[in-house]
Picture 1 (cartoon, rainbow, N blue to C red):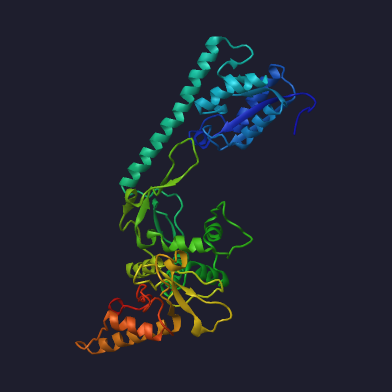
Picture 2: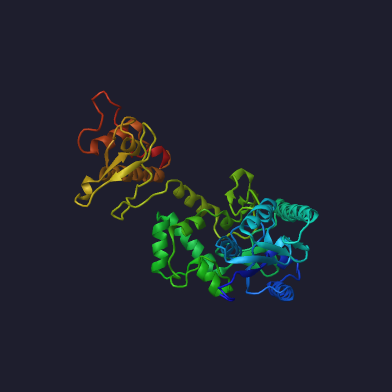
Length: 433
């Protein structure tokens, strides 16, 4: 830290937002520092310390440099704060007025805004009133800018222009049109691989482990190595460490079938960093916006698989029917029950609602082994029937229920006790196979 710490500091604060950079203003951080130091030297201020924030809007409070300024003032380390103009302090009227009228006077800090001719030590009442009006206009400016930007984004979305600046994994920007994307052959092949793995029955976590084992670069690392595009979440120490959530995002992204979706999120206020999701029906969607990587048939299969999301047991295994067994009475998903000391013949499916709220349903226990056998037999009957058109036999619900109950091992839960009849939980309705 510069300066003599035995006397209070004269703090010089500079700020430059991204909007200022785009407009090509002359208020660069370097220019502000030169201007502030020249002023301080000419006015005889000593023990000078320059702090700044680069690329941060004045509507935001959580600016690192600015927070350090406030901390030093509250700790009594600073006697004076100088900025080039009031907009560098804040573009938020209430926050700026609070500092000028309450915080700085209470702590005995002199505040100077050079180009506004504002000096709290020499101001008249008119000067104070003018500063309040300036703060109002300084907030109005980003408010209007935010409205204009939102209007432009909405107009582009309505016209089908791509808004997102970074293409999804598997795509790259079209060299001929920066508002369009085209498949990136190498990454597109990995996207197809991910979809095929899911269609074969693997979940996002399993797919992530497979990709890591095969040393396939994660999207952020791939983008950095191929396009030189860095991302805050990139971890060069683990270039192959895929996460289940990243895989799930890919499997649910309609960009891969050529559907462009815009305005999926929005900020309720330009003053806040809070981002909220826009309801599905209010998003802008454009069919055939770009070349698809995944065909519709594969996409539909994967979405059906994803509707019944399946998770491995605590022992790290997953039954082939997990997520697809439902209670015929309450409609809840049946869960596979097993423990390390059991053999496979003891694995059973149990009603999920009964597991959570025993008063609302009965266990409807079904042995997993017999359930698989019943499903296999139903599939075999359908296969035989398909070979002989006109002779397809589909057993009734009752027959299938009895088949499952007979093989479930022991008396079905609730049967003959006045409770709910044994469920066809897990019984494969052959009409839907």
